[in-house]
Image 1 (tube, one colour):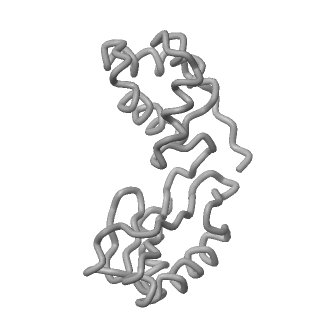
Image 2 (image 1 turned 120 degrees about the vertical axis):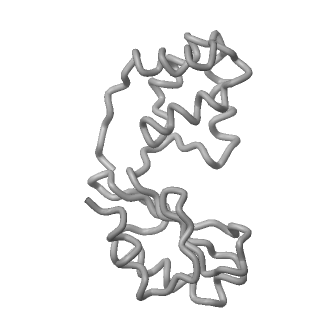
Image 3 (image 1 turned 90 degrees about the vertical axis):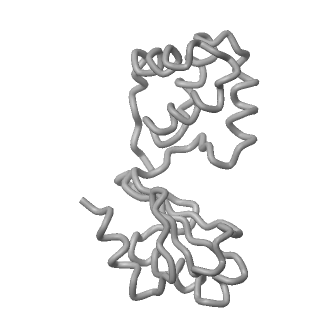
Length: 157
C-alpha cells in the first residue's frame, strides 16, 4: 500500500495524557494509536518514546510481541478468515479465495487504496458457528462463498 500518513503530534499527546503518562498503560496507549492510524507508524513510536520516557526498543518489543499490533499499514477494514479445523472442513479455504478474488488482494496484503486488509488465523475459537469471518470485530457465522459479497457490501462506501 502506498498510503502515507502524517503523524498528528497533538493526537498522540492527547492519547498519552488520557492515560496519565503512565508507562504501565503502554499496551492501551498502543491500542489507541493503532485505532487512529490502523497500524503503529515508526514516527508515532518515536514520539511515544519521548513522551513516556521509555526506550524506543522497549516500545518496539511490546509492539512486535503482540500479534494484534502491526508496524505496517493496514486497511480501514480488516477481514479475517478462520482457518481452524472446523472452519477448514466447512470450506474456509474457498471462502478465503473468494475474499481474495473480490478484494483483489492476497492474504496478508492491504489494498492500494487503503480500504481493506485480508488476514487469516489458525482458530478463532468459535468452531460451532464456522466457517467464521470477522470484519472489523463483527463475527459472521456460517459463512459461505455466496455470502462474501453481502458481507463486503456492509463495509464498502
